[in-house]
Length: 375
Image (cartoon, rainbow, N blue to C red):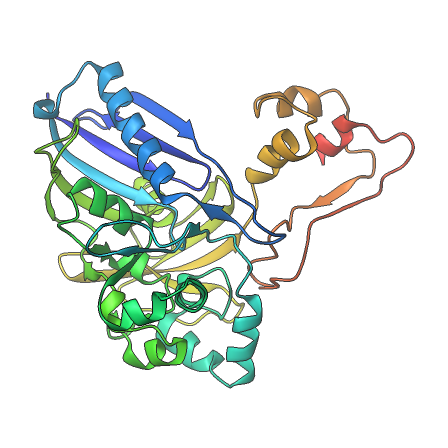
């Protein structure tokens, strides 16, 4: 029986899942990795740890399933989408930590772009709002704040990628510098009308075209994995995590929608082959591209969902493991008037407020950890 392997590189952990021909899960391996917070509102990941954690779970998932590379007919990549990485084309060494999609350091840069009258240009061409959420201003920040980076970029010595591009770079021994249309549509560089990188947007953001990956279909054979336990297996799919969930939950017809609960919460509505503009500050994004046909979606984004449980564990220390949240919350019948707004990295749709911060209100002398967990 042939098997396929899905690599799910998320914001807080890397996973590998082995599926059989019928779509049944044969094995799963998952590994958390370090969250780096250099300043309030800044979130980073170590690119090498992203890759090492992903490589570890690949090996573990195959070992659990008692499979070798010859048993696997294809591997696909799905990933946290807007996180930005820049690396040296010659050495493959990252220039800086990855700047995570939750990071707010470029909020003021987005304010300046709006003040300069660029908001409508970005909205009509990319389907996105001007927000620090997306990759574009993160790349510009890296080029401006890492010594020599802009000069190297201008000389064609640097490569930019979202996490999918970084994983493919590693899986192919640096041979491929590619992304798919769903991830490209989250950068602020990609014109969803023309389905190509947009020189006007690149000029506004001061990012040279030479750093960009080639945009490919979401479903095709790109290459074979060059080394490791999946060596020789065709790399046959790339799609951003929320779009992958939309396809995986079979929202393949216009009007079908799904909500994903993970680090954040994301609602996607299939629009079909024609992009539309939202009247309620939702994003218009590429859902996927197959056989040169692009499917679009509306998206509503909530930045902090499951990550609030991780914060209760690692930040407040009121639980020791994420699973404890349920039993702790069950100790009380209700939240006791406590409300928690999990805007730890700002608010997404429809507010798009990068300066909002998390809030807990309604606390009394009788408030316990269980009430906060329930809230």
